[in-house]
Length: 300
Image (tube, rainbow, N blue to C red; front, side, top):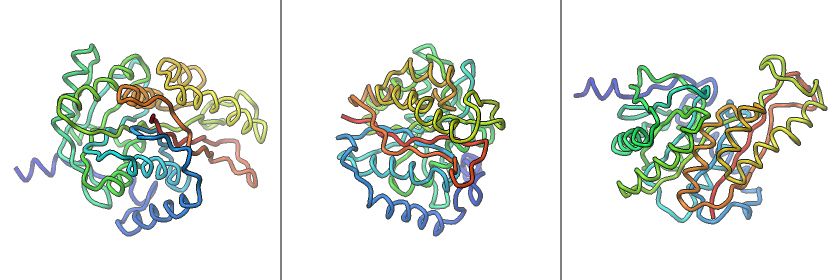
């Protein structure tokens, strides 16, 4: 039994590089993000936040945005039993899959996987026509889209369990978002749902540079391309979220974003609110390659 439990743990792959590798360093970083957030205007956080969108670049770029979303969800009026985390870079024809194990490892301690809800999601997804495969930790890919969120989850929801799901940018995304809420209702679980995606990846490194380079490219990404994605998310328009991600390349994990919006809508959310937007573009030392990031909360 003990050997099976060890094999059932998803180990860390990005700790110490994309985010701090020790408990003290992680906790200090999150507390610094929190200190920064105390100066922000939180009046735009919707009532009863139930879900959100977080970025997944290294914490130096996106940690504050992700932290603000998790903080908003943690300080809502509900006690959360389980966090459902949607992510993974996928194609439209990729199969969905879930992490089938006992726990995920973080520098702050392990997060137990909600096995009953994971199984129920597989059953409901399959029943709705979505082929969703359980993968053991050894077969589950190393994904920054997911792992960079685990320390935030452990910090803000220390007693919660987790469901981890890879979602393709297809009709399956809306189905899975609704299915996990239905499965949770059957198990009497109180959920918070998070979709992990970055925004436009711009520049020659990413093979995407339709607006030239420099400040003109940055303005196009922020004011047009990423703005269109944020509008779709704010409207919680599942089909438009997928369309934006596939046609305008402004969400690298549009399936995860769509699933989170669909779940939020089924939980009673009526709008998305963009809490923060940022990018890795540095106007003082501009580079040809940069990425946009958004932190969003869905609620009433």
